[in-house]
Image 1: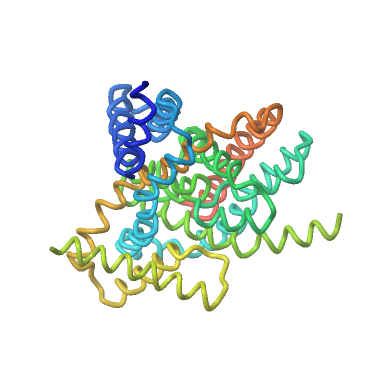
Image 2: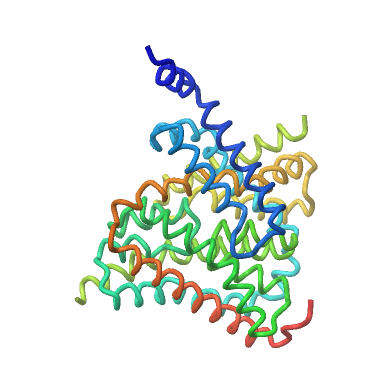
Length: 241
Length: 117
């Protein structure tokens, strides 16, 4: 009689196992991130996600079972997104100062954020399903899932695209800021949130509260703009071809 | 229990967002609607109540952990996309680099005083 399987089944009957696993991976990932002297190409969230995926594979826990338990954590994403309204309010004077350039930049940048990748993927011969799955790559997860369903893409692939985009945005922004000689935290934060959604925003809060507020702004405006226009544009292009 | 009542505020705003979406069919998430409503409320009141700050600060600090369970799912679909990954990765990495450069360049041009903090 093997004690392993019943024990795992017993443990996973309570969501506390998945929650504990997530907390452990997060804390360990953060500690490793500090130990590695905070590399910009390897954000703490990627280390933690790799640890967590490794742990799930090691103990043989199916992702669906884990995800069910982890709902106890992910449900907090709702109030946490609402909470971003606080730094947004606190930085309101500095945002109002810049409303004109931000208002001009946002539609162009948010459109290009989707178009560049779509064009490259299309040139490389990706299928329509893949194009539909990566179109919302710069939009924060809760909004992006809705958009992708409307376009007929795969949500799992979308989440992958979100991870890659979010993670790659961080070194891209530091690189581009150095090229263009930009050290304004407001611009860096806005670019992080606009292109790298929640992952970029988390990074921006590590830089400073100001960068974080501009990132929240960039993230939410990109989300709203893309949610309204992308499904519409998609329908027009599909009709044309 | 200031944090608890602040948390109740956050949940209420999220639920209001759900109601707004139900009646308007807006393609936006209720979190974003709640965020904009919270920001508007704070702007009207002119200050951040301690209860909301006590609940919002720790939640924002935990944001990275809250998106982790979804992120991990990626490692479990890699097999399904055999052969397509290179094209997808190239598109995402190059596309993101271009769009980050465009965003920053555009902002710098529009704001004109790039080095002022």
